[in-house]
Image 1: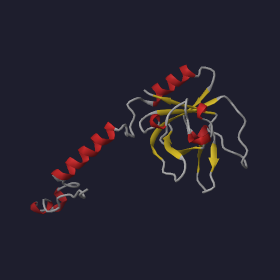
Image 2: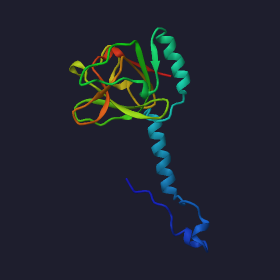
Image 3: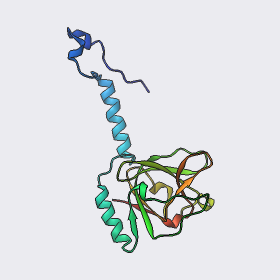
Image 4: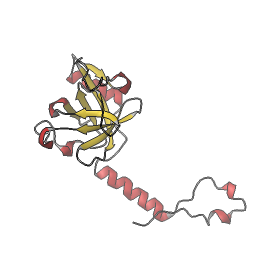
Length: 174
């Protein structure tokens, strides 16, 4: 893949280089940017949602009428010396922004309504989420819900969500 460049010699055509604001993009750069955008949209890899958080929250409230919907990571409990917090009937609603690279586990990056991000690692038996969802269902650009989610301190020093039961995951296709 060729590296995209800006045409700096075009700036020198002007008497004062400050007259040109930013970069002048070449045709190749614009073409590569359009191809990249089309590729992301074709594979469902958009980090922007067409559905606002408020609409997704309303849908989740209809799905779980008796549960507390959390869409802010600041309201999510954490482990206390490896002990799980007590169940409180909570559902975490988040937006999938990207895949999280991990050597063994499936992982994703999620964003809350304030724009904060954290990662989720799936610790499922036999790495099989069937019949609750499939790995193809989890992709950037969709909303996801976790029942009784809490922050976990991983052995590598990072903090995120550890999901051990596929039945606690719901993917919203909105």
